[in-house]
Length: 167
Image (cartoon, rainbow, N blue to C red):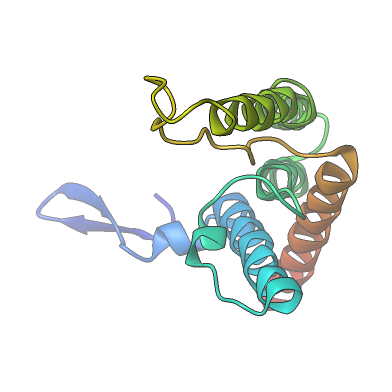
């Protein structure tokens, strides 16, 4: 039984705060939040307007998907060891997510841009002229993915240092 487990009437319960001690989960969620926050403030800096969609939207610099999966894989490596199957699984997941962000999702976003332009140029009487535009910011450029990966690496590493100091 771990430190976070209580026994109540013979039934094992887990303290509600134990999830906050899950270093890989906290590191990955924190990396995601930092990446999305960076996008939010970057939009304000560039366009002088607040865009709350940046807090949850995909696309842009840095890649929050890359930051999240990199922080997760590295935190698992730090916690469980880099030679185990759990780290291998997290690393493969991270590679697939980052590859997908620069491949399929980036190309789908570029296709959406072209399709939106075609629909925009249709005559008003065309049945598709009033259709809603497709989302264009789906994927990431390689620099956005690299920046997200570095953010995830830094987040998990700082988290590991904090974890080591507080033990």
